[in-house]
Every structure is written in structure tokens, then in C-alpha cells.
Length: 100
Image 1 (tube, rainbow, N blue to C red):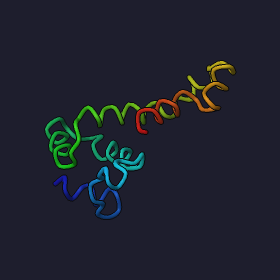
Image 2: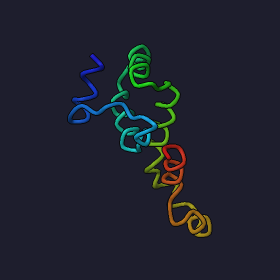
Image 3: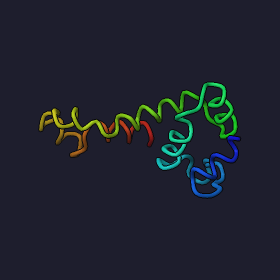
Image 4: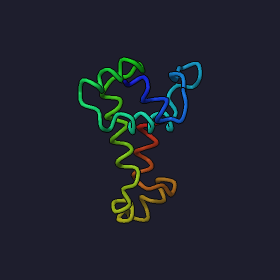
């Protein structure tokens, strides 16, 4: 079941990311978050074993994705802090730190 879900979700078969190929890209992590969003705990564990992940990694990536577009908090950030962040809102900084 899960083996068929990944190719369908990604538009074709993608081999598991490996350190030799640069590891999990941001796109890979986002795809994993989408693919696992509706899974129960048992199916998530199966998915993670299949791809060499831990459920905690998926949760961390999910949290980063959820915070990526936190425009309300970004708009309330002071200009000094905004400039110090390189012009990036806190959501993007958090996403970069967690996914990078």
C-alpha cells in the first residue's frame, strides 16, 4: 500500500534520498510531510521504516512547514529584528533551520 503511494504522490518513482546524493532536499521533506499527513501511527511507522526515517523527523518537518507561512507573526516583527534576519520572516528562518 505505502509503496504505491509514494510514486503516485510524486508523479513517478523516486529512489530514497541518500547522503551520497545530497540527502533529503526541502522538496523531499515536504513531499514526505504531505504523504504522511493522513497516516495513523502504525502506517506512519511503516512509512518511516521503508524510507529510513524516524516519526520524530516527520513531525519536525511538519512543524517547519506549518510555521513557514506565519505571516501574522512576521508582520509584527520589529524592523530591527526583520533586518537582522536578512529580510526573512521568522517562518522562513525556522523552515530553513529545520529543513536545511
